[in-house]
Amino acid sequence: MRSSRKVTIALVLLDALSVVVCFNLVAWARGLIPIDQPIIAALQLPVIIHFLGVYLIDGYSSRTDMLSVTYASLHVIAQAGVLLVILLLTYAFIPSGFQLQSSRLVTAVSYLAVIPISLAYRRLFHLRLHANDQQHFFIFIGNPESCLAFKDECEKNRMSQAVISVPQTGAAAGTAASLALQETVENYLDQYAGRIDAVILRESSQELPSTLAQRLTELNFSGVPTYTLELFHEVYWRKIPLYRLNQTWLFQGGFQIAREPVFERLKRLSDLLLASIGLVLFLPAFPVLALLIWLTDRGPVFFQQTRVGKNRSLFEAYKLRTMRMQAGGDVYTREGDARITWIGKFLRASRLDEVPQLWNVLRGDMSLIGPRAEWVMLVDDYEKQIPCYHFRHLVKPGITGWAQINYPYGASIEDTMRKLEYDLYYIRFYSFVLDASIVLKTIHVMLFGKGR
Image (cartoon, rainbow, N blue to C red; front, side):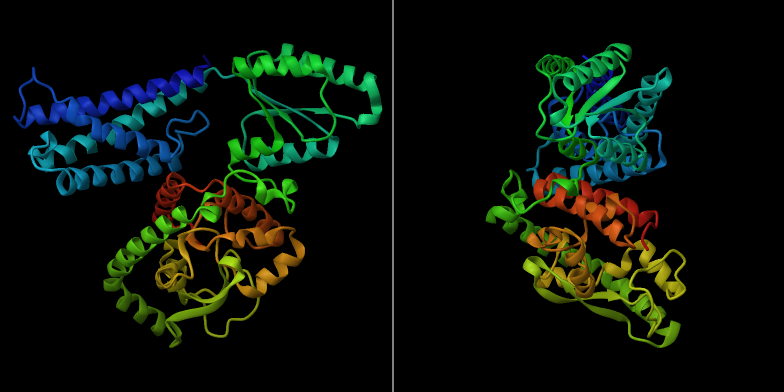
């Protein structure tokens, strides 16, 4: 069993223990239970919800940097959400007589104590796991061009592993090239034994030597996985590489939201409920924001633009105006763009400019979560330059989405291609768990002002 798996199991056990201990200590301190009669059965609910909240932010993954400020804020946000869910279920849905209903204060204080404790031992485990780390490696087997592209992609994604490239020549090179490939890979596997995190194979028609394939199979079942390059993108970076796209890509597995009516209907119901709540909560702040927008240059409060929706249907999207009247110029917003008003900077950073799109959600033009709704003029250009760009129109666009939280604001064709990889991952692997993860990370983005 690899050390990272042991750490994951230890974190799961410690999470359960910390929830149980904190609840019992606070309940005992309040005089609600004797010290020799701890609460156990009733705590299954908060433990399970805690597991789900941590899982949504990758809090059990060895690849998560638990020392980062980003993870710390996500941990606090997720656990605050867990506390709200626990209180809601305990007092609104579970019949009276449930043991945790004896005191709201005990539930709140207990779980508020769990938040810093569970974050603290995560940081300690992360430090211990990586304290004496030697350099780890990926072995990449593919043609020279794909080797360079993979190294570049690893650098962009800030991977800690170094990449060992093993160029694979064409099939015409014959037996001698196959033997050389096998010997090279075997040497690296022996030289860096225990420090190879994965072997990645660029998809091609050329077969691996049988003995090398057997060795990789043995490694795969002993804890060192071998991935195709496409699968590596999906597992590590959670996106679909564009080089794998063609007109038959849609016939692969997944695509529940596009294929199964039940998923689309459930998503629509949740959109209607949450969009209604969001608009009601936003109404008290709207008059103040509308006045500030109008006072800036006496222009309209709302910005309206034709966007492309599901199945390429067109609709009018609404936002709070953040740019000066008749700004013109670049179709993209740049860093420090002079066209953005002072109140517009705040609205974009907090994502409050997007709130009027909740009306588009209620109308059925958009969903809360999905690919970004793009301007029709940009879509026309993208579809000419990016093969299979139209796949993103299989689902309704969203106010937030997988691409929006994983990639910065796009200001070029290259950025659009990179964001498309995340959008296609969402379309193919949609789930309500993934939606919940996007919501939590969107809250983080809003609180820390990362909009543009």
